[in-house]
Image 1 (cartoon, rainbow, N blue to C red):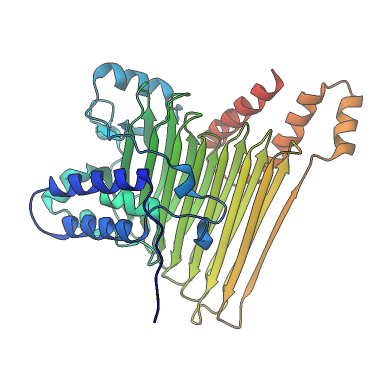
Image 2 (tube, rainbow, N blue to C red):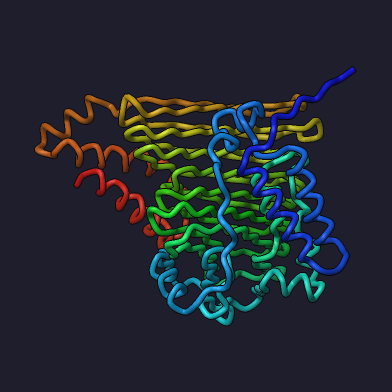
Length: 442
């Protein structure tokens, strides 16, 4: 006889369950979307918030961390939209789609500026119109339970559906901006669905920003389908307020000879977790997934990847750099899965961390799970302090210690940033990183 012992729900879990029930009960009609939402609710009721008992959440215990869940925000006014726009980083030449406190701002978005061949619809409009993009919702969800993703799906509503027609080379980046400008803590559950047609190319930029001192919760998920021979350049900048909780999920499917170049910068939030679920569905595809995390104070930042090679001749490269100061805690978990049919797979994963304080902590957990016999795969992880000899050399040239540290840290992070091919976006990233470092000098 098997006895399943489930701990009693926390107050936060009870509040979330009640809010999910109320939200789903208020939804009219039948069909696929209500079914998806109810399934997510049921999964949450069965599993709750993930804790250390779950291997994937060993280093980020949400059950202990989340004490309450703010209400979802109502529609925004013009003042809040103006404040949100001021928080959002400028992205040169981009067409912007703006979410304020988790609600799509039609006034703050510029759908008309999208390149020819690029179509964007508010998610609720895509669902109401029966657009094929709506059929992609939840199509790439992982089979294993993911607490934040279950909440994102259970509260599904606000978001955007984006299509890039086959063969189109989008002239302008699409900037999907999320901002929390208010003084009141709220929750935002947003989703982006993107389908990039065969042979197309597009640059997507996601940014997340909010006011310091406000304990809002931002939960965003992306479902991205990269068609055969298509190229997607994705840059993500997470700069939430210092009291915020941030949960991000990328679900990715790569077609034959498709290419993804992803760079993720994380330097905000009291607690942040970014999950990437990538799957190779076509031969000859390439995924380059890189990132940089900068954390200080008592910030906790977690990046977790699962890259699944399901077919042959796939190539994946993951490189993540982490800089931790004060009492910050960094987590990197990366798994490359190579299935039996995925012969000739080439996968490489590396996580490197710089600890600027004796109290900072880094947990690295790279993994390989290989079922094919003709592959090249490897992983590595390092954590250590700044090179004292290089620091001494720079100080002997007259540089103050903090500025010498800044130069070395920039060089350390530059090894990952250099993979961003777009010079304008690379400059934006360098500016954001420099801003973080300069605050340490003052």
